[in-house]
Image 1: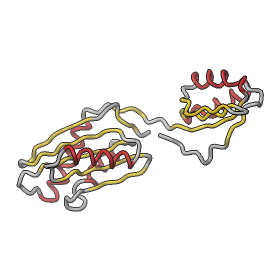
Image 2: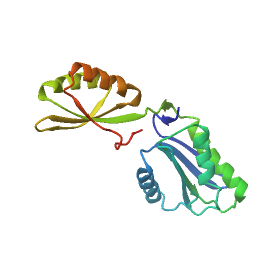
Image 3: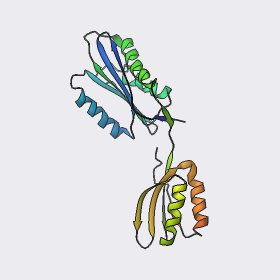
Length: 202
């Protein structure tokens, strides 16, 4: 099962006068990853490169940011894959020290910067979440809220109209039992919106 990190981890290497500042941190998606990379560029205006690799929601991406192709982003991505991480962004900020490292030296430097950071990492399993939406009479709202709390569900949206319309998310592994318990306790008065079009969240 893929894991994410309890918190960001960092490492810094100096190789032939070049500084490699590595970081691995949790991100929800590609948009957040790109925003974080831009923050690093702004924070390190003197850096020669800000290379990155992303694993999020089963999607992967890597960027060499001007380093020779395949010497930075891809090796960093392989470290994330090897560690079975998901929902994480690996970045390395490089300050050039005036000495070229060659392709092999670059691959080792970028790999090591991420691998060294991950030596400090505390990992946690990623729990796949499912979004559910239902409508129910006002008299059943208290029941649903109690069952949701017991199941570890998070209420995302509640709308009061002719009926109460509630959207929530909970661990996918608990969803079937949750629906069954509410169908029995609610005596058939709770209506479930099909969730086929709703995304599963990590």
